[in-house]
Amino acid sequence: MGRSHADLPLHYGKVPRWLAERMGRLGIAITEAVVTEYGRDEFLRRMGDPHWFQALGCVMGMDWHSSGITTSVLGALKRNVNERSRELGLYFCGGRGKYSLKTPDELLAVAGRTGLDGQALVRYSKLSAKVDNTAVQDGYQLYLHSFILTAEGRWAVIQQGMNTATRMARRYHWVSEGVGSFVEQPHAGVCGRNHGLILNLTDPAARQSREGIVSLTRENPDRLMREANLILPTHHDVRKGDVNMKRLGAALTLAHERYLRDFESLLMLEGVGPRTVQSLALVSEVIHGTPSRFSDPARFSFAHGGKDGHPFPVPTRTYDQTIGVLEDSLRRARLGDREKSDSLKRLHRMALQIERNFIPNDFFAAQLDKERRESYKYGGRTIYGKAKKPEEGPVQLSLWDF
Image (cartoon, rainbow, N blue to C red; front, side, top):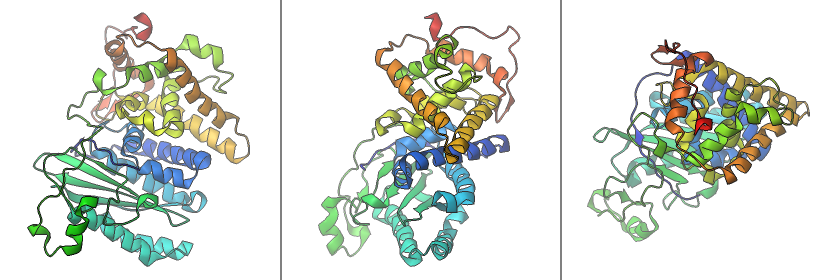
């Protein structure tokens, strides 16, 4: 896996309980679906993809572009996945701040239960942290270290550093299958804007310097890290330029009532309203989409909004129905009935079919306004409170009016 970069503006604050609980349920359901369909190694690869990870955070209702996605998503997954580690064969260790210091003990505990080489795992954990804090001197001080492990001993690491001067965060992704050496190009991806010269002793061009190095402070910076291909802006609102309009339009079209009636029986989604289908289409893409589909993670915030109200309040009733459909499909699949889980896969395929011929019109502003004004219908909530019904009534405009 190659490198990719993104700006992550620093955000502070706590995730409210009403959202944290939903994030946990949706996160474990998506994790189980990926592991069931594609295996544990594929789950690690996705955790090593900064674009996919950001899309996952967006579809879970977090602030779509912020550094808080990292802490909140990893925290939700750790709490819920570890309760089913024996079944899923996945283990989350570490975390933010003081929890990162517990990583070695947690890895040794997992090794004791699984028979894996605990000392080797602890070494990998410490080396990855040492590389990103010392061998790559880019102005970001690590404050989060998460180690994701499979029952077979393969692993991924996600770390995040803070640059208080620029108020930006940088996220580092590692996947064990791509690590031939801890000191030469080990990263699956690095998220963060290039702010100038970076001392990167993991670059292949620095091999001779590594071999003869006496003091890091005496070395000149070797090479600029490659330019970002995913730059997340500092503005909080989701704008038209932040999303792929063709892809978003296809998902909205799929959810339109006139279209939905024609295939609801095929999808095994009878009784599910168009707003929930919109969310399910985006969740299905997170589960079944290929890597190229996640270049615009802001689009996935149109599933369940954001806790800060951008692009719109979190529609809690829609969120709950999405979780219910996904959990039911997984429950049936465990019993050998894959009809519903297969229907969610078909939902993604249908969106792709619509997308091929979809011509995006200028519907973005009207659709966003409609989501916000109708938010009260779906139990809309933000960190500021519950959405209220507009006095003049909800607007009816959507992409179908253009």
